[in-house]
Image 1 (spheres, rainbow, N blue to C red):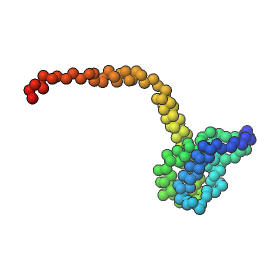
Image 2: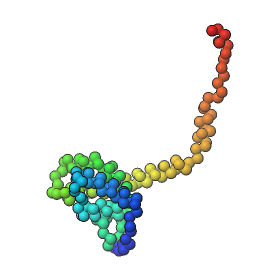
Image 3: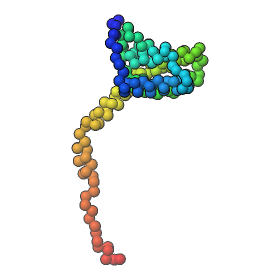
Image 4: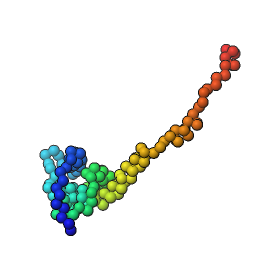
Length: 155
């Protein structure tokens, strides 16, 4: 496999997205503000970003997801994750976390495609010419009202 030697600095937007993901996962696991995710958990989360089991600069990236896609996938999988947490017994926190990330990993491509298609549809709507629709709607709008004053004399 090719070696990925470039070290990319995170933008402010990526840092904010990472923090949202990090704190969402901490909350999902029931951690409080005094607890932190283990380095193994952090590497696993960052591995999802590049389509690898854990983040490893010596292994070629297999994917290019964003932290927002990963967070959206966690949220999409929340019912399955909650069910897994209620019905399974885990050896330890690491085992629980790996189980959760496997659920996310199995759904990430579906969420990615849905979000990509939604963005594409949004762009199509924004770029579409709506003038013919406006003309069509205007044909149904009422014209000037004609008022019949003949009945006014009766009162």
